[in-house]
Structures are given as C-alpha cells and as structure tokens.
Image (cartoon, rainbow, N blue to C red; front, side):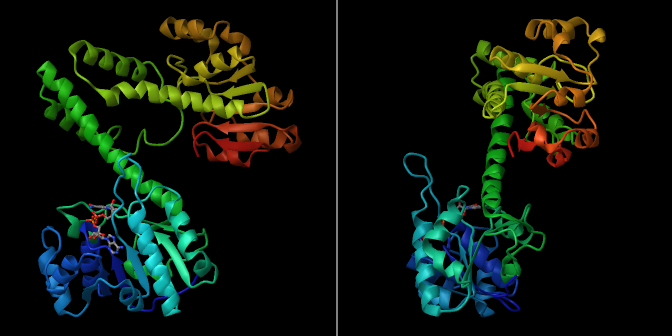
Length: 443
Ligand SMILES: NC(=O)c1ccc[n+]([C@@H]2O[C@H](COP(=O)([O-])OP(=O)(O)OC[C@H]3O[C@@H](n4cnc5c(N)ncnc54)[C@H](O)[C@@H]3O)[C@@H](O)[C@H]2O)c1
C-alpha cells in the first residue's frame, strides 16, 4: 500500500460538466484543495467567478462559498491542474457515437494530457476515472497512456463510478446510494485516494466497478420500462396501473428486494413461464407492444443455451445432473430448466443421469407427471439414488443446480484424478473445494 496524499487532498477535476462541477464543489466542501480543468473557457470563467456552469440546485451557492474559502479554482491548462494536485479525477463526457458505440475520445485526450503533465511534474500521482466506461476501458486506456508510469510506481489508476442524479446531485454526492472503487490489482491499496472516496466504498477489480455502473443504469432502465409496460397494458384494459405498481412496490420480500437478483438458474416452475407467456399473448391480442416482457422468455431460453454451451465445451459425454426440480425444496418438475437440459443433452448423444432427493418418482402425479412424461419420457431410467457411486463410474460433468448432496461425502470418496468437471448453475460455493474442475455458469 502506498501513500501519495497526506492529510486533505490536492485534487484536479477534469471536465466541469454535470459530474465534474458538482464533484469539484463537494470535494472542496469536504476540505480538499480543488482545481477544476475544462476545455471550455466559459465554464472555467464561471467557476472562477463563483457561479455554476450547469443548472443544479444549490450548486451556485456552494461554488461561491468554496471559491471564497480559497479551496476551489479552475483552469483550462491541464499542466497547471496536474502540477497543483496529487490526484486527478476524470469526469469528461463519454457520449455515444452515431453507431451507438461508446466514444472514449475525450477520456483518451485527457489521459494523454495528464500523462504528459505527470512526466513534467515528476512526482507520484493518482488518476481516478469517473467517466462511465465499458468494462476493460480503464485498463486499456491506462496501459496505453500510463503504462510505464504505472510500472515505475509513479502513477496509480482507479475507476470510481459516479452514481449522482441530476437535480439532487449535491445530496447524492454527500450521501451516495452506492460506492465502489475499482483498483488495478487485488492488493492495491486505496489509502492514496481516501480523500475522494466515500468511506463505505467497496474495493473491487477495475472491470467489476465498470460493470457495476452499467448494471445499475441498465437496472434502472429496466425498472422504468417495466413500470411503463404495466402502465400501457393497464391503460388499454382500463386498469389504474399506478395503483397496481404501488402495491407491487409495497412487497419488500419478493419484489423490492435482492430476491431474484442473483445470476444463476434460468427461471422455471409452473408459474413464471406460463404467466409471462399469457401476458405477452394478451398484449399481442390487444395490439399493445410490450417488448421488455416479450424478451423475457427469449432471454431465459438464451440462458439455458449458454448452459448447454458450457457443457459442450467440456470433453466429456457423461452427465450427472444434481437437482432437477425447478428449485430447491420442491419436487415440481413443471417448467424445470434442468429437465429440459437433460432432454436436450440426451438428444445430443450424452449419457445422462439425474440425482434429486427432493423428487420421489412414485409420488409424481397430475400436471407434474404429465410435464415429465412429455419432456423426458421414462424419467425413472435416468435417476440414481447414490451420487458417489454414480460418479465412481468414470469421469463425468456434474451439473449442480441446488445444494442437494453432502459435499464432504464427495470430497472423501472421489479422488481428484477421477477427472470430473463441475458446472455450478446456482452459485453453491462449497462446490469450489471438491476434487474436480469447477466452473460457474455465469461467474
Ligand atoms: N450526468 C450525470 O448525471 C452522470 C451521472 C453519473 C455518471 N455520469 C458520467 O460522467 C461523465 C461526465 O458526464 P457529464 O454529464 O458531467 O458530462 P458533460 O458533458 O456535462 O461534461 C463533460 C465536460 O468535459 C469537458 N471536456 C471535454 N474534453 C475535455 C478535456 N480534454 N479536458 C477537460 N475537459 C474536457 C467538456 O467541456 C464538458 O464540460 C460521463 O461519462 C457520464 O456518463 C454522468
């Protein structure tokens, strides 16, 4: 762990738009010595005159106060900004190109300017990217412009996503909804940039912090589109959709919670596929376009395909599926993605066996039995009751969808040389320690 900055920080902020001007003023308020830098002379002059270059409630007053306190100024000269600071925050725009792809030209220009200025300054400097960039961008840009400076320990690079919302930006900066800092290497310390961080910031790899920002925005966009689609179908049916959504939001156990938000098994069961399908059919009948809902079943199918691809990538034709009911603690096979996986792999010539202590074949009946018969006839012929003996028969791909066996029993009974592969579909960490190669479905 290095320590570049002692006490309060001397910080330069590149880009004085919606993010940069708020960041500059709020860091100055925190006691940092801040110099903003922008190519726009007008924005720089406004800050130096104590006015906000963008419309944001409270920002004018804050900028004026910090200017008067001598903690905030601005320049158009990147060399002056870097020379007067130990940390540079990059807050320039990352717009879309005409193709929709991300345009990193502003970030690249600033990175080059900071690199030149750090070389001229000749002392340690931390560069913290705050502009929203796709996973891998920070490392690529930093390698290109700071590669030698990072190697010689002069420059440290971080990605610190910004989550403020325009209109409540000051309050969001002072109390962020989420804070995570991406570091270059796992053992990189963040003490050098502590003065710019929220104290609860989690330290993760650069790329995780970059993906986090996109995940949040995509999630927000999904929420808005979802509510709007319920609104459109509600309006068409004469139903007060705001009341429906309000009640949906009142459920903090399943709806507004972390439930259903872990990457893992495709959804299944007797309700979700059927009900999504019915809602989409109704919307088509009514001529109401619901592309988000329409995409759900496709997305789920695509997820199962990715599991099949994971299996096919292994050089092994013997499969043991651990967990076939659609989720833990039930014997319901309706809509089970694992049952479909078994059927698909059988049709591809795999030797398939199934282990699931929750499913008692003799007790299957009604719609459950019908679904099994339709999708995997003679289900009983694939079932095994002893997972250790099944694995002892030879190298297998063990596809595990739920905790349904004792990992210690496997650990004791199966030698590493047996050559088994584990594909973990639902994130059961105990599987990582078993005597087999391990791969998560989407981690
Ligand atoms: N606006 C938001 O609410 C928000 C929230 C979180 C993250 N972000 C992300 O933060 C980044 C900045 O967004 P913004 O809304 O503040 O953009 P903006 O367009 O308001 O501001 C960008 C500023 O960068 C300046 N600039 C361009 N090239 C420069 C250079 N070479 N040197 C110095 N300054 C330069 C521009 O003149 C402009 O003032 C984007 O990546 C955006 O996606 C924005």
